[in-house]
Image 1 (cartoon, rainbow, N blue to C red):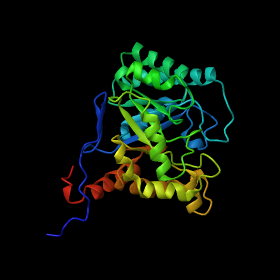
Image 2: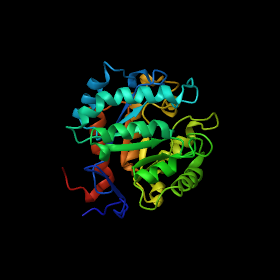
Image 3: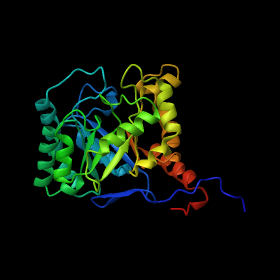
Image 4: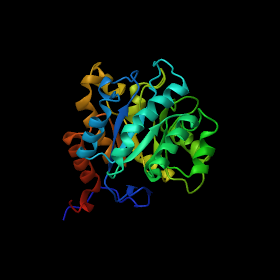
Length: 298
């Protein structure tokens, strides 16, 4: 028998949100992106009141376990909007989404850096008796709104925390990613349900592609934080750079390749603009490679 070269990893990372378990020993979860922000860098992710239901239904039917709803583009060059405008966009989208997820085993994360937006969204989840499906996704690492960490602790909501130092995604290199995530985690209760995000992307001018390539190739170091790992790499600029300047519309196949590497390296959640059979097959095969001789089939 050929000896496996796959390192034995203790299966000790796991959280439960609603009826969905995320972490070691569970399927890699796929998160579909729904942007109600017309400023978003990839137009294929933008939905409105007339298209969001169909897009969400398609993602769920293809296998998404989470939907990530964003009312504000976080791309550094995007025009600013008010918190009130972001709140209106998110709540209008939730008017459509919440009745849908009442009959589906799917979570919805609210991609916001502001307590005011999160509070209005959580109230809507509670009104629909869907509080257990709510997730907060803060790309600022709890740094934008000084009330965010306390609000998460008070409401005991699960959260996705992205590595950030001063502004979203500005952690340069794995050492800074780990240090900044530790700093953010220190603000939350010890038993908080947290998913960590290394912050892939050209968030600041200094963050050139080698930083992202190195982080994805060594993603497993994030396991030391004891939290499930989410990777948001879909159609991002490092892929365009590797492919000779490809635009977001032409970064799909590169995204599949990066997704496979991320899963092999230990990602528990893949955030993507594209939820379709090719993405799901990529995740499944990469998961089997990660399991190696421990794979038991499906």
